[in-house]
Amino acid sequence: MTYKSYLHEPFDKSKFIPVYSEFINKPRGGLFGCQGDEWINWCTAEDFRTGYYKYCVEYELTTAKIKLVHTPEDFLFLINDYAEFKLLLPQISFEKIAKDYDAIEVSHRAVNSCRMGIPDEVIAFLPERERIRFRNIIMMGLYSWDVPSICVFNPDKINIIKTTKL
Image 1 (cartoon, helix red, strand yellow):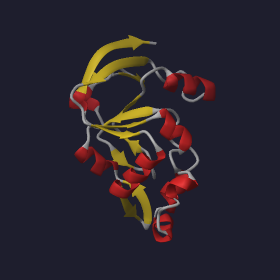
Image 2 (cartoon, rainbow, N blue to C red; image 1 turned 90 degrees about the vertical axis):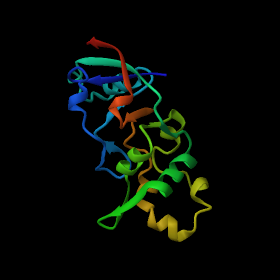
Image 3 (spheres, one colour; image 1 turned 180 degrees about the horizontal axis):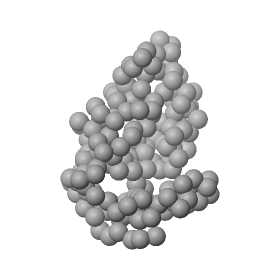
Image 4 (cartoon, one colour; image 1 turned 90 degrees about the horizontal axis):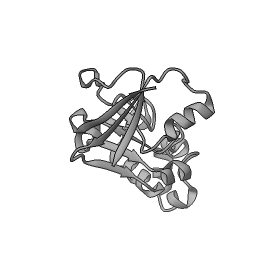
């Protein structure tokens, strides 16, 4: 599988920022990418950081263990397995995920179906106590994942194919 990341400068493994949790449902750090041009197309359509990205880096992940989030149920299991409470609010611990996986990939289906929260029919089986406990993540869903994306946690798994100046 080939991915593309759009960067301000060429990829430099020595400047790789380890992933950390800052938002409820999306990590900071790591290397974000996608399988096609959806990210740069979204940026252009939303007038987001146009002119900031100067390079397109194409790469493969060599023998990477990837946490796949392809369905709302996958997202719910991710919350169950990796949520922790900070300042009494639940948030996904991407540091914990990074101990078990080299990357996380969120599919088109997951982004679209959980954009404004996890659908009611998916969380219906949860006890009310759990729905209340995780309400911030459940309500937030995958809103901040603008397009289907991958976030690479382990830079040693990145095999650069080519870098193109935009």
